[in-house]
Length: 393
Image 1 (cartoon, rainbow, N blue to C red):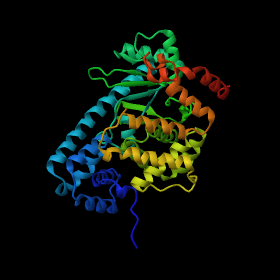
Image 2 (image 1 turned 180 degrees about the horizontal axis):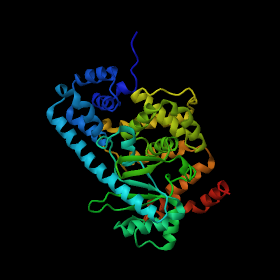
Image 3 (image 1 turned 90 degrees about the horizontal axis):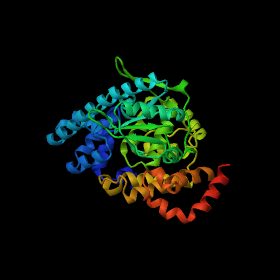
């Protein structure tokens, strides 16, 4: 009887090698599978492109460096250089995040650092494995003006909204967006200042209980606070889903977190229901199961049509262009993101609020009066506003 190939087995062999290399602690079974894949005919340039697009070069180097006899030296050297760059950047980010949180705390502002270096330290115990782009700071919305002043006094230039934004534009930005952005400077990473973690205020909570926050220590005197495990896992799932899971690194994080604490799955699903992110959680669990064999908890509901479609979107997006073509901000990704926005919504209110913030917000909220979405939507503005007010009494 012919064995039916899984979705992963139908993907390019180079993608399968990258996935196997990101599988976490290498058990005997994982090692045997990785070695079997490495003995296949591999296009090493393609493998490097796949690892780069998915931002997992550090994890891939950690695994492949123990199989040096099966990997070309030039490939290992490129991966090693990327790993050292990650280490340098994450050390800078960890130190600077500590500095910023201390500055904000000195002004009486509560702050949690989300994703980035703290997540890499928590999940992998090292700073040379997980790729991070910027420092994400979460503060109470009431502290936004004070926190913005602290960052600007620290030498940061706000890029979104621009410094020239009027009070009206700033007010619109706070309604329709979720964070301010600050340009990186000499020795300073890019910073995002969040008053909520999601663009759609009906997707996820508006605040997180500080009593559940945890401290991540990098070294003596270098530490930050981040969300509690349940809220962190819910947020990671929601974040990945709103980006249509276009990076493998986000699914690796989900699998690593559940592997570190298998008992987290059941309460995590319950928390996701409370936060209106259950479909994102189910989508993440299915992708982690596809790629890394992460067990599906018994409490996971049978996938409905929306979750099955979300699952297919994630598979399609992750392997678009042979899993090597960069798709950030391209038309394909935008289509998947907007379709996901529709499918992730579990209520009329959540759907309309998401569409409102994605498409129909005033152009000022996007920092550009030439917003294409705003121009296209203009004729429907009055009809939409009536519907939105009906859904948001």
